[in-house]
Length: 301
Ligand code: PMP
Image (tube, rainbow, N blue to C red; front, top):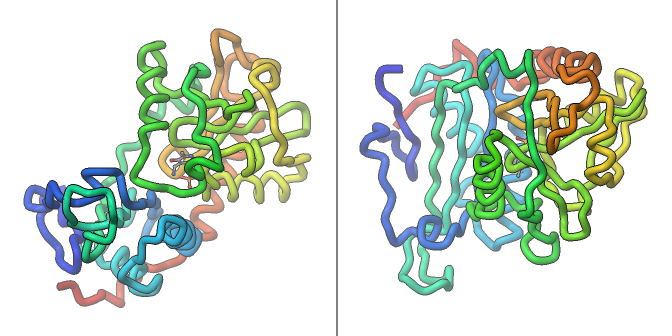
């Protein structure tokens, strides 16, 4: 990509000039919300669902996004067009805005709206063939009654601590348990285990983000005739599963072949994981909203 344009509060600015104030409460306090979305061949995958999650997250923290969902859709499309991207990862960030040094968001006049679209740095293809080795970490998932994991806020310290623990253990991803010891999710992905025809993923109340990819996989597993259940499970259930996989916008569906030193199944990506990945890759093409029509170039400011 030659030049990268960032949408910043109503204007497109070059990446190197896209700057926000050090008084922005997103920077000072992690006060804001965000989304990560994929566009496949001009089809934005489940944009409505992503925008619903963004607006629910914002409502939960009493942050008013200064655009309707329709306007946000147009901004996403314009950002893709401006950057001539049809296959990309899109990041939406809404921060509380510029205020004073106090915590009170009342000092922030207007939220800042940022949209970044980048050519996707895909996980190395090799990883989908070999699968991931992961560990469970000491960092527990935020309790839903403290800071709901359903809010995709700019406060990702809980998840960052998981990443740090994973790196220290020499792996690239890890699982978090909730405060009761049930498996919750990865640092930025949801988790599934397969046992025979049964597929389990932790229910919402265990404490995980309600992943858009997770929802799509639950639908697909139902359609494909698996006994798909949202049920709590422990580390033990993970260790003795036939297959384990993670889901997320960036990773899609990725097999886990070792957890805390225990080899999962045959130690290679399993049949059901591969089948679901294939079904998911079909679904993103069938299901995408064609919001990037060639003939309908949107005016860009
Ligand atoms: N959990 C967390 C904590 C995440 O940040 C993400 C990535 N957004 C996910 C799960 C996966 O969600 P999605 O499938 O919507 O990307």
